[in-house]
Image (tube, rainbow, N blue to C red):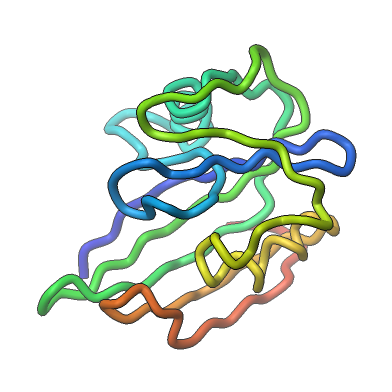
Length: 158
């Protein structure tokens, strides 16, 4: 099974969250946090900072890892596992900007557009916004339909 390690980060300011519309590639047309694959030699945190700089033009300075999720997806005859390290960022340098990859927008937490996000987001994002740390497993089919999931609250993340 092919395994890919990624990051995702959500900026939070009081009762608002920054989401970004993915404009191309995997997940295009979905609101999400900034993030992406870890490059060789990078730590998870270094990758998260770099992806934020590239995708929305900000540099995280105060952040916390809030979840580690495994996403299982079929790719032809092969199954892939994407491991996402999720962060909430509360302080950063710069102002969010639109790039070729993403178009950021602030939402009130009570108005998060779950219907235009990945289906799993409604199963875990409200929990981390409430201060919980989570480990999750999400199984998708080849049509990007969530087939099953398991989310567990933990005291410490792996």
